[in-house]
Image (cartoon, rainbow, N blue to C red; front, side):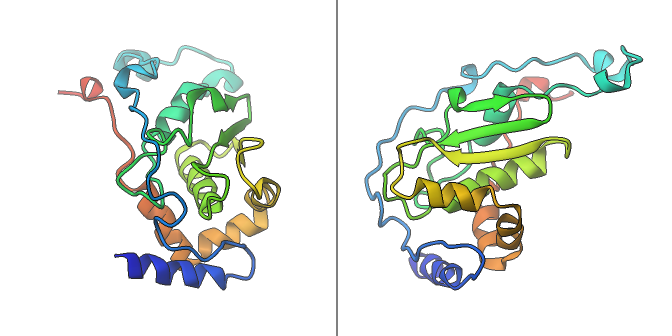
Length: 198
């Protein structure tokens, strides 16, 4: 398993449009601090009855959109897997936190905190967050992802990469990177069982 991750990382190091350091999974932070996940009570989402969803309650075209909240965005990110520790979520490592997500009419802004200032997979974490939100949200939202200020030695370079539309598009087309991102996203949608129709 470690050999495959190292081979993927080496393939990433040769990607001309995105600079990701060669790494071996687990090298940067072999013993991360694990925080207790907040559980289902951490984020309270507004749920509407099926009849409310099916009935048209507005004639204004602009208000036909359901507004996305910061809590909903956080809920979609909290279970993403950490690339170095795939058995741990970004929430458990406090890489993503509810107070670091902002939403306005057309923009979603997320700041994440790498577990160590020398984290070699910070760009990969940012790409995973960005890919998850681009796949989950309506296209009208622009997704901005950056490192929380002062928490990474190369935050300016990583932020520049994450907010360069062409570099991100090229990275998401790279098969090795796409595989790592998909692994981080797989199985992260965890619906509230009480909301499922009987």
